[in-house]
Image (cartoon, rainbow over all chains, first blue to last red; front, side):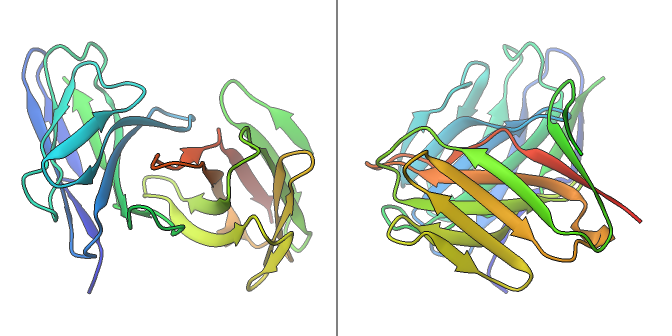
Length: 113
Length: 112
C-alpha cells in the first residue's frame, strides 16, 4: 500500500540528548515536510524539502536538523538545542509544484523525561 | 454554539444537525484550498479540496464553499455524527513553490 510512515509512534528522550524521528514515503513525492503540533494548537512548519539533497527552514527550525539523501526519506533530528521539544511531530509529503493535497503520517509523540 | 477557548476555537453541535466551520485565508492569489480532519493522536486526513476557479464543491456529506471576494472558506458537514468530532484545518496553496499554509484549526464537538 502507498503511504507515508512515521516511526516510532512514541519516543522518550532525556534532556540533553539528540533524537531522530523517521519519515518514509513510497508515494514517489518530491516534496516532504515536518510540522510540530503542541496540545490544542495548529501545525507549525519546521523544515521542508522539495527535492533530494535540498531543504529549507520553516517557521520554527531552531533546534532541529534534517537531511534528504533519498527521495523516500526525510528524517528529523531534534537536537539538545531545542529547549522545549515535547510535542507531536507530523511528517507530510506531496507532489511538488502541483495543486495536490499533502499526505500525512500518523505522527510521533516525543516526550522529554 | 461557537466559542474561543485558550487555544483552538470550538464548535459544539447536536448530533444530526449541520455544522459549518469557517476559515479566513490571507493571500488573494492562493489558487488551491484543502480541508483536513484530525482525530486525537492521529495525523490529519484529507476531506475535500477546491480550486480557485470554483466557488462550491460537494463530497459525501461535506460541502466546501469558497468566497474569493472576502478570502473566506467554509466546510459544511451535513447530519453531523459523533464520528465527525475532531479538529478541522483549512490549508491554502500560495503562488510560487511554497508549502501549504495551514489555518489555526477548529475543534468540532458533537453532542449525542
